[in-house]
Length: 483
Picture 1: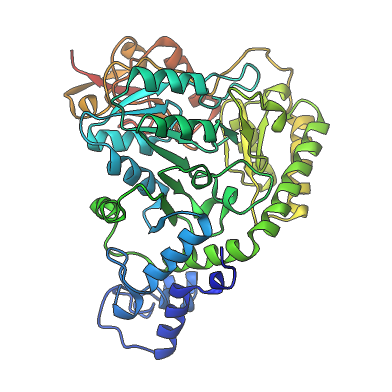
Picture 2: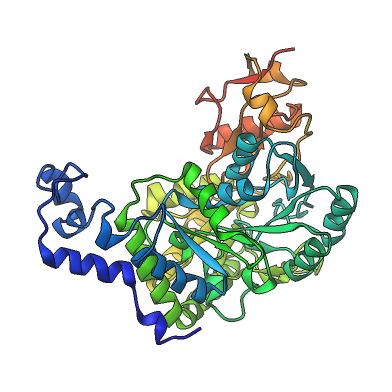
């Protein structure tokens, strides 16, 4: 990577030049640099709304970039070690779906773990692909889904030689990584594409001593949430491809679903954040690692909590661990993760990333400070003292492996009826149920409702998890396929 080259930020520079020209707007957006919506200008700042502009020749066009956006994407590809990079403004959901739609059509098989984000299953609904699930092991103490075992992937590949791709999370929301180099070698040896969800892995490309990135092991495509750990604005993302993908075809697929009115606030944030990471990422993420490891040590010193890390690595189900993920198991203090999450927000004004049944995740990144870490540790110590209970001893898993009856497209569009949750046991669901975050479906279209799954949903509801995906926002009723 040419660091001198990386000092350029073409979209940012073009916007600055545009701002200085004081162009009179007779185009959209209709707020006309904020003048038509003074409350919005006051909230966001006049400079911000003045740069909320439409595509035009000096600023290029994301649907078919030929100048500054193209240059910014080329710099991004260089920084990430990819053959090509695409700026995405519909979130990493759009990046993930573009990956799958680029390689998978109706009837094509794709090998993947079941603990994928809902965007993956949504993509299969759109294209009619057939998932071949590799069931992840569940950790016996912390209850989270682990990585894809190489032997299980190999078994799935050999049993489904007609599959078009293997899909991997790198890392998972909790920081767990599979054996990426070996999976890449296996996948390509069988003529399949390797697709990687790196929504939580931007920093892997710039930090030292972290798990390997998808592009470094030869992945064909990777979806990277620059806005999560990379510092860009929410909803901005990057799609990376390797040399064996047709860049023009991928652009065509992206344009099927991505907006034709791309936000230059999002695009410029991607451009600036790429420059920042290319020039200062190594130093920035070294500080992130140091803060996260310090927090992990301090939290484990409280007692009851378990802030897990690299000790989980066993070379099979956990082949590496992203230490920037401050994942903490909370059941040892007698509270679920969502209960600790709520207490941190409501009583201590601390907003963490998520809480589920057994765990919380505090997202540590480039904008955090040591004093914030100290405040979090102090609050967790306080919560244990004031609200902690005797652990129940009952084991809770944050992931229930469902029985897949149909691929997701057919049941999603099938005729359905709505039943009370308990009466749906034994039936096949036609919709999603998930805790969000992290957005991993408890049930997806085509899966059988079991009493274990119903109990899991009811417990999550009781403890205050945000359940989404179903037509009934309270999840008292669920849609199942008509028999």
